[in-house]
Image (cartoon, one colour):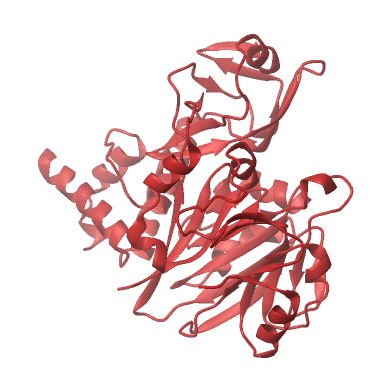
Length: 83
Length: 328
């Protein structure tokens, strides 16, 4: 499964908490919470862009882990449901 | 698998060249010979036979023979910011830090801002002392390769795994957010004089006292479904100051945890039974050991040191943290 299949809009929606899913992967839960807090405290475009890059990086590094793959699949299914 | 060893048994294991993570009382750790090991002080353990307080035995995790590389690295309160950068691409890192040291506070407050935070597998614990010796002895970490002990600093064992294996960190937290007030704080800190409760700024010490809050229950924050605790250390009504075992963070919404009637039952129900054989390392909080009276009680086959703080990517409280090694 390839994180590049996730659109920029979906990454933004994840960071801005417009998409909320029941994730399994602990690193994702913790990092996403931290990134959401960061953007809440600093809602600048730079802050949002940096946060999206950090979230993408997490999936790139852990894309072979089953828990991360399952969560990526959930994001992709949600993205498809919006299309 | 046996995990508690006498000093002589531990010496034999080290003499055999095994790579180890060790926990035990300082009086034993100072007698260990040099070798590829790191250790932290603590005399409390979850063992195969239940919770145990002892200064006569050491808890030992032996690194599996299939690891492809490992490195012990020492960090200062400043350089610990590199811990995620230094961690292996495929593998995990085990970090140990003395309680109440500058490195403990630095890591606790700043880890979420470190480069690469949560993008590598970092687990570990805050080392402590016997509760009767708080203020008399200092917690220490030991580096077997350098034959030294530290009262401040972090020791990290970076462990690489072969491509067909991976490490997965998880937690067991029996606490959930209660249905009470929503609490936020004005700054990142190990203490607070004021808090914002349901939108109103109040003296937090007065709030806790007036509402008869049971401070054995932690503050709980919901991190996208992961319940993350911050435990109360002290409520000082005279100074109107509340101190914590981990920092509270500005902007995060906390609630006091819902009460727990039976820790062991709640714990064993949450522990993923199918994973217990794959768990390489785990640790549990001294407050769980105390408040839930874990001495003599088995924790579902999960063993490890009892800690003054758990680390699963960041500092946690009143939580069991563990890492499993699994096959792809």
